Amino acid sequence: MPRRSDDQERILVTIPISHFCEKARWALERAGLDYTEKRHIQIVHRVAVKRAGGGTTAPVLRAAEGVYDQSRAILLYTDEHVPAARRLYPAQQPDRSEVLALEERFDTVLGPQGRLWLYHEVFKDAKRFAPWNLTGVPAWERRVFPFVLAPAKIIIRRHFDISDRTAKEAAWRVDEESTPWPSACPTAAATSSASASAPPTSASPRSPRRWSPRRSTARRCPSPLTCLRRWSRPCCAGARTPQASSRCGCSARSGRRRE
Ligand SMILES: N[C@@H](CCC(=O)N[C@@H](CS)C(=O)NCC(=O)O)C(=O)O
Image (tube, rainbow, N blue to C red; front, side, top):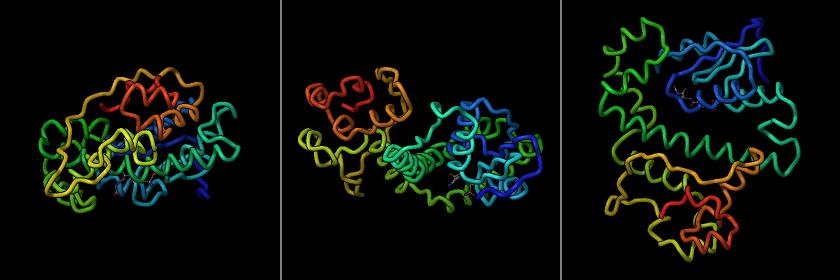
C-alpha cells in the first residue's frame, strides 16, 4: 500500500534515460494528470528517491494520495484517474492477469536486458551519451557529471553485471523478445531454425545488431489489450513467412516480423 503524502502537487522523481521512468511519464500523460518531474543522474537519484519516500529505484511518484515507488503502482494510480474504458488494466479476469503477466515480462526481461545492452553501447562514447543522460537534471549535476562519469561507469557496470558477454546475450534476448515466443508456436517451429531460438554461445555468438526502427504496418488496435494480444500471439509472432502468418490470421503484423 502506498504511504500517505501531505503534498498536493504530484512529483515524479526520475532518471532521464530510464525506461521505467518513461513508462511512468507516459502513463501520467496518457491520463492527463499534472505533475512536476524532478530528474537526476544515476546514483544521485538515490538521495532524491529516498527524500520522496521511495526505496532505491526511480521512478517514484509522490502525490496527495501517497507515495508510489514502483512503475506498476504508478500505472495503477493513473488508472484510478481515468474512465473505466480507458484503463490500462482490465477489471475482469482473465484479461487482467494477461495484461499483468505481459507487463511483468516486459519489466523483467525486455526492459532490463535492453538497459544492459544500451549502457554497454553508450558507455563506449561518453561524449554523445552525456547530453542525453543530462536532459533536465539540475545544473550542479551537469557540472559534476564529467568528473563522476568514470567511477559511475564502474558502479553501473557492476550493478547491472555489464560486460561484452552479458551485452551480447542481452542483445540476443532483446531481439528474441521483440519477435516473441517462436518456440511456443507449431507453425513457427516448422519455419524457424533451431539456432534462432537458442541462446548465443561463446563459440557462435549472434552479434548485436545495429538498432533501427521497425516500421509497423499493424492496423490501429481498438484497445490496449487487443493490441497487446495481437502483438504477443505466439503463432503470429513466430511466423516467418506470409503464408504462415496468414494461417494465423495476423497478416496485419507483418511489418514487425524479422525475416
Ligand atoms: N521494479 C521497479 C524497477 C525500477 C528500476 O529498476 N529503475 C532503475 C532505472 S531504469 C533504477 O532506478 N536503477 C538504479 C538502481 O537500481 O540503483 C519499477 O518498476 O519501478
